[in-house]
Length: 161
Image (cartoon, rainbow, N blue to C red; front, side, top):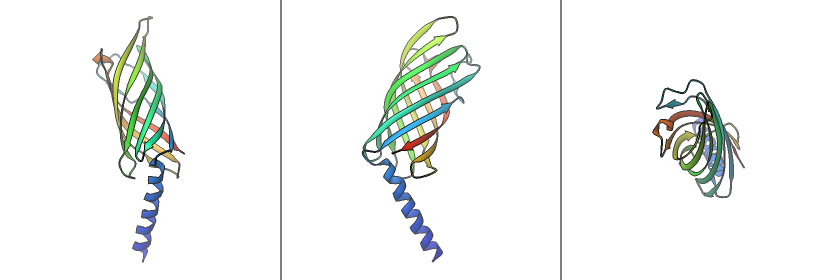
């Protein structure tokens, strides 16, 4: 009897989680970065913040917009972008991708603007019905300067409403 009750509770919980990825729902996703691995050895100290906001166009597919900043030595980066996320079933595992515009500012006054593509994979672990912790990995590829491309790890929170 306990096994049947456990299976029933898990079924109800998975249905509640799936409801968060339905068409018309919104997501707000602030995150912290800082565990980046880059192609160049120029970066000494890193700290970044970012936020994504999006809406689910269809069940499991969210259209997202992004803004972020990454402060490091010798270059600071500011990002604006757009993309999409696909959530696999009700598990919380997602894949995302998009295009972004970065403004790079080097110590000493040199600036440049680069377009790039980003890919990410992560997991939305529900703490409550509407709040998640979302660890993830990402890769950002720069079109013109591969030294500015990076692979990193991030942790974020998701608010679904």
